[in-house]
Length: 226
Image (cartoon, rainbow, N blue to C red; front, side, top):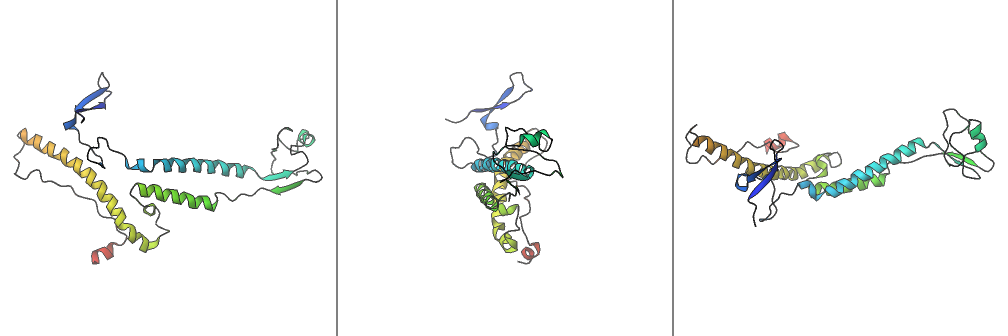
């Protein structure tokens, strides 16, 4: 019940793929349980939230475009375009619709008992903006990140120092995944070249490490002093 080979897409071959033995494959994945055979992308935990945000933002864009086009709202007896005024070129559209278009500087004629008022819209609404941030925060949290990593203006300096540990923990976790895979690759290359006679290896040749990136900090001076 364990994989013996992996079929890799390879268009350079006539078959269009290549079968590689499992012991020749190095997995760059953060496994969550011991018998896991396939890595799960981190974004999988939050992908539905990102899709929902994309859909709601597209809807808000359409809504704002409609509101920017709609300038005046006319109330009349029949709720339709005045066919007589339309025939005289004083309003666009057809009599069967409730929408008319006007050019700048045109004077609109209103029927008796009708009214004309400017259309106003407060978009995007403040409540929707707050809800968007809430969904973003939960999506980032599912990834093991914090939304403030992208925009720390809301939390201030003290807040940024507070979640600096979360940032470094996320970086360290990703480094661990990459380093485990790269160690296997480097050990294979070093051993292979030694077997070819390129050099002789010391007894502890397999003890190798990689230079790690600098830790995230918001106050380098304070960190050096401490």
